[in-house]
Length: 94
Image 1 (spheres, helix red, strand yellow):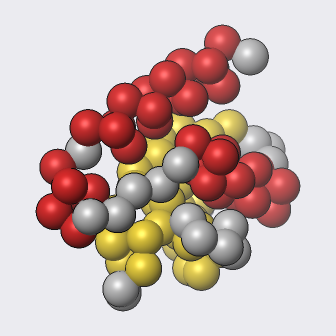
Image 2 (image 1 turned 60 degrees about the vertical axis):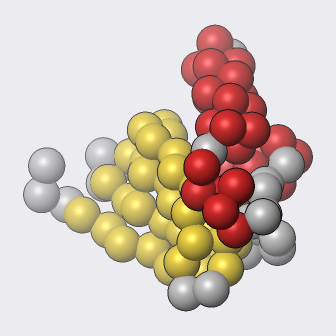
């Protein structure tokens, strides 16, 4: 639970003050970011290691790095507006 609270606080500050969002006149609400995290966790399980919000191929996405319950590292991209997973990359070698 502490991890979720820290992620929420970190994302709140990131979304509110990120220069990338100021340049594009776009932002992500906390509900959208939490939706992205839920989408990734529901699909892969495990533990979230890192979250970044950026533009990818013309759409705002959450890049989420996580480790699934089997220890596999996964990087997934979730579209902020829809919560749909649009791309993933898997690694076994760590």
